[in-house]
Length: 435
Image (cartoon, rainbow, N blue to C red):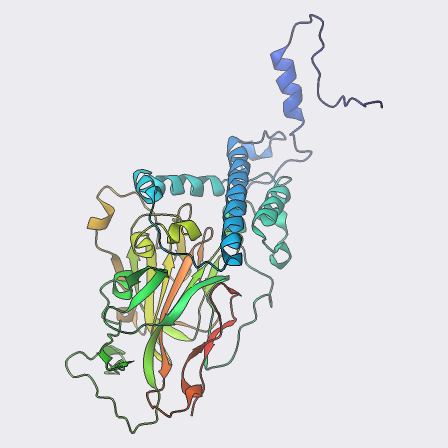
């Protein structure tokens, strides 16, 4: 069998001929020259942007290596999770040394460095190759992208890309709550009893009050016999919109057939390959925004079963307001390499900033939209914000529940999803029907 030798790159012969370093690297660099001048990102351009040579930057090489590491980790975790599911084993909370080790790492600084790398411009000819490699590794659907791949100048632009019109149809049923993100449903249910605990993983839960913070808008729940007491709200004026009545709560009237309000939650995890924009789950009025500057632990499956209070420890942005059934809050939780959470309704908000003080000694930064008018009105499906990579969204909301022993169960809010289900923006999380 004969082998053909390529002569595209210089091959060093065995006989003693002096090796010219300058000539070798000059000829090698010419292989990466673009045939035409590359347009500058800035309007007007500059003299340097008209050069006709470009060597692959170290940031691009680091990005490619990062993609390989993330892909290998994803394959390992997916295989382990599938094996446990096949055996019918439900994952339980098992703290290990990883959490202690992660506390020693400067994850916020690492995330800022990753954000800097992903914001660097990639050569036009290399963009489709990197984005296709990312799509193969994390199962992204590139056919939904609104622009050609070579139009996304950086990985960050690719992460927060918009989709073609009609890619995410919104359920128009007025008695339906839709998913705000693409992702996997981890947990959902009704918040009952003292503390209103949300299950992080089997064997460990955290309080909704710790997640959302000290909020004047958050309803309180009391337990009476087997049922949670209804949540009392009063509409006082157009300026104040609503307040939680703590001094004189309403008494449940057993003769009333009108459904009461329960407090529900749903946790959706976004993988790195998912669509990263956040949309409005319903028509609602956002009254307040609260920003907690915390840690940036990873939010993958291993982290949820090994790190205590994961969603409470991490940096997060909370939006609170009202929809047709009462209270609603959306918590966008940051993670390692995803310290940047953008809000389209508040572009001036910046997350993962360097902090000189201890993170947990600082109170959350809060902004009340109500004092600026009637809040921020959003329609179901409107774009709300974006993550720079995968992350997690926790939705807390009021919805109808029937208190009558023989009442019509169709009036109660019912989830349309199950644990582990894949869901997309605009698809129904739950429904209810009027009497």
